Image (cartoon, rainbow, N blue to C red; front, side):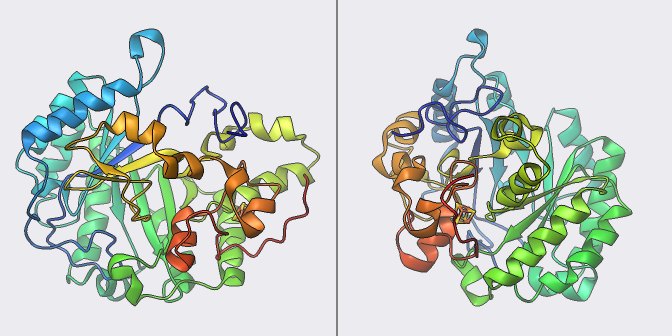
Length: 371
Ligand code: SF4
């Protein structure tokens, strides 16, 4: 492995991605009351056969404690319980309590349905949920509900956002970026600026699941959106980040380098904490049936937690190890001087070419060979 201690392998605060993800995304169920047009999970009204039982889920939590030893200063990964709708899991409260009892911090990604009541949001705060994410894909009900496919979801999302703020529950808002939604981003930003949130994540579509029915931006259009996001992020009351558009980090690093900062200054900058995180490097995904993939958007199953240790799979699986080694990347991402910090979307490379080590086709950058 060519990067035993470089950025992307060990974060400035000492997190070694070779040994442990920073975040485990766990799809508790694919049951959901919504039917979103881009749904990665192809969520259904009812749970799928083979969903992890409570006992299997608790065994997974036991396994996750093997990633680190908090008593020895080794933090455990953060657990994001997602779906489908995690609120559709009858044993949700038990699983949250079992995770927290093991020292694992938990965030939730609930769907906005009648299950996400005022009482439920205050309950999340009371039991120590660290943050929630909500999806907002349009600046008005026509745009948002057209993606979520359930009328009234736009108003309910803004109401949930305000109740979460009242409860003191940190929120990340996720917005899908496609050829159809990109022009609405400035209006969504203005709308969000009138509310309280900690983070806005622009999720650049990966064409998997139901998302194959939608259209990605062209590389040039994506670059313009990222430059715009960088500009508005400088004055926003909330942090602006991206999901599956890792080359946003290239823009951030390049701006610092242009301003005369050294490579070491860039690596010490607070934004570099996100450097290197990408599918299988710093994150890993467990499906509702226990399948382990590098992320929720890269459907390459490397094993199943019903018969394998997540810790062993993450550390030792050859696919996951290759995804953590930028020197194995091909094409422009392989040659790119930013690949330790960025690395491109391995999920999009796979969706477009069938090879997760290929270049990210959304990035228009032509590598220069050195910083
Ligand atoms: S070429 Fe690849 S590694 Fe370089 S900035 Fe673009 S996506 Fe990132």
